[in-house]
Image (cartoon, rainbow, N blue to C red; front, side, top):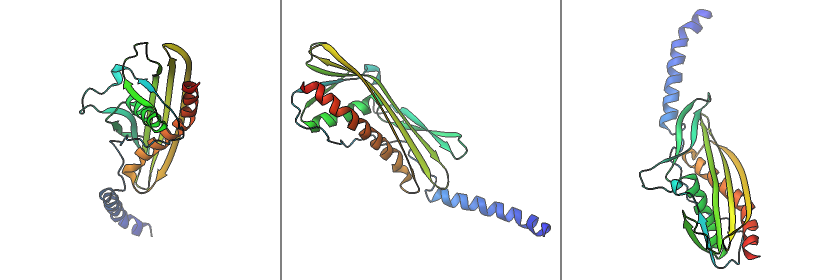
Length: 207
C-alpha cells in the first residue's frame, strides 16, 4: 500500500501544479492592483446653498497622470506581501472629491483647492487623510478590507469653529469579480464615512 502511495505522489504533485495553473489562467487569482477611485455620493443631505472650499495639502495634489499612489498592499494566503494597491489619486484627493460630490448633490457650490487664504466664508481643511486598502488573494477567494480616517478643520468667515475626525472601515470576501472587489469596498467605506460626516458639516454651515 505504501509503495502504491509513493508511486502516485509525483503524479499528484503534477496534477496540483496543473490545477493551480488552470486556476490562475482562469482569473481565480486575480486582484485589483489599480483601483477605481470614482465615488458615488450617498446624497443624504439637501438644501445647501453658497460656496464651500475644500482644502488639501499641495503635496497631496497629483502633478502628473503618470503618478501612482500606494494606498495598500496585496497579501497571499500565507500573509506574504505579493504586490501593492495603486491609485491614480492620493488619499487626500479621493476624500476631497468624495466630499465635493456630496456637497454638490446637497446644493452647494464646491471649490477644491490646495490653499486656504483666510477670507473664504466656508472652508473644510482636510488636515488628515488616510486610506488603507488591503487585499488577501488566494486560489479560493479574495478578501478586501479598507479603513478611512479623516481629520477636518472647519472655518467660517476666517475663524476656526470646529475640529472633527471621522473613521470608518469595512471588509468583504468574494469568489468572483475579484478585480472589482477592492474598488467596491473603498466605495462602501467612503459612503459610510460620509453618512457620519455630512449631517454634522451641513448643520455647521447652515447655523
